[in-house]
Image 1: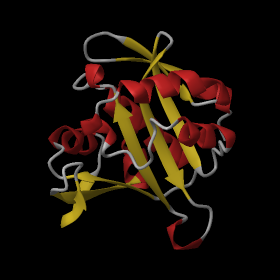
Image 2 (image 1 turned 90 degrees about the vertical axis):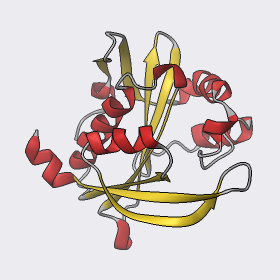
Image 3 (image 1 turned 180 degrees about the horizontal axis):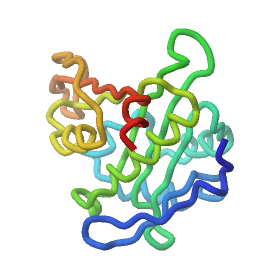
Length: 187
C-alpha cells in the first residue's frame, strides 16, 4: 500500500498551470474552509454537507479516517483549488464499491483539473481493492458528464425528478459507473 506522504504529486493542467495534488491532512482546515467559502451558492447546492458551517468542517478534520473517506486536495500555491473524495465502506454489499465526489474552483473549470483528480482517485481505488466506482450528479451538469466520461465512467441510469435545486425545481440525476479493473488494464 502506498504511504500517505508518497501520494503528493505535481500535475500540469491544459493551460500549463502546475498544481500539487495531495491527501488532506488535519493542517488543511483553514485553506479548505477558504476554498468552500469562495464557492457560489449554485456550486454549494450540490455539496452534501453545509461546508460553509465551521462546525461541519471541524467534524471532518476531527474525524479524518482515510479508510472511510479518502480526501484529495489540489493546491495552486497555498490555495486549495479542488477537493475530491473517495468514499468506501469496509463491509457488506457495497464493500467493493467506491463513490466519488468532487468540487473544483470555477476558475479552474475546463482546464483538466477535475479529470486529473478523478484519475488519481481511480488509481488509488484499484490499490484499495475496489472493483467499481460510482458518481451521481444532476443530468444538466454537462461539464461533469463530459469530465467523468473522459475519465472512463459510463452512464448507467437517469432518475427523473429525484432531487431539487436550491429554487425547489426538480432535478434529474445521472448515475455513472466505472469498472476499476477494466480501467487499470488500460494503463
